[in-house]
Length: 367
Ligand code: PMP
Picture (tube, rainbow, N blue to C red):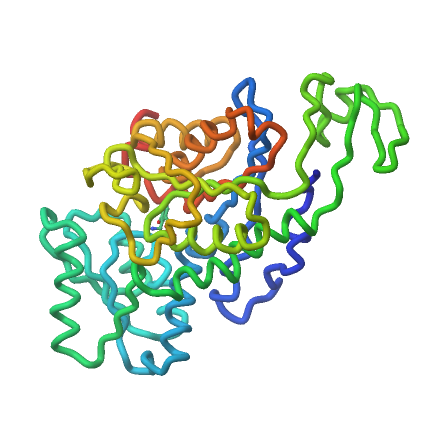
């Protein structure tokens, strides 16, 4: 199949003129990965979540948790949002709080990188810093203590809040599903000839003249292409993305395979123990409450080093400036795509954020 224009095929486009920044969240594009290693006959499409206005997938949940709290009457004008986070959720919340006018306090370990702190300050968020050696656990217990002493604070709780998973069911999953099902049929080429849907050769192109629209150079490479999404690969942080997207995809087609990715240094979902790693955003070190494990077919582990290598590869070979967890997801995706059973299938891999968020990290250290 040909997914030539994902944004149009979803039927829902970003507005050309938005009423405010939150209207520009979601409807992110899929892009085909072109330079696959030899032997892979599975089509891989990356869902580029850095097309969100805060440059990550977490804009979606930040907005939905706030809107949900407003709907439930917990969040009203004058109240302050508080959340223990050092990552993309903090940036998404800071962006939306600035737009909606809510004060925001982010509680995080003092070890958090200076570039993140500066972005958050730039959006007007305030910080409470907790001892670095206590990690996120220290930040969570400080929030709990602060909540006991104030009725003006509203805690959203991304690891336990069903509004996290909900937005992925309503938007991320729907965008992926509609990109495939709303798309036109692929034009199939056999030995350089365009083969129409009713089986008649229509035109005779030289192979290289039509290479820009997907010609395969030899018959051996012409695998039967699936016309639906067959495989989803996503890293697990809170588990919101994989649970929300996976549940909708499985409900619509139970044959779709769902692969979760976690750091090999902290293989908690695979039954191992928590450990330090450099894949920010995944591998929380515990099994998140909202993670729906029943729809995951297999958990794959990727080391921080492999994740970084694959993230660099995506920038160098595909021009995709993604973060480290995208590299981890891509590395795992290649392992799955090599399997015989997945030849000719379509795979979607979630790329959660933008590479520029990691300039001070190892991702950018060799150049
Ligand atoms: N990668 C990055 C960079 C993230 O910020 C997150 C969110 N924590 C994830 C992956 C995983 O997403 P989720 O929390 O939905 O599992």
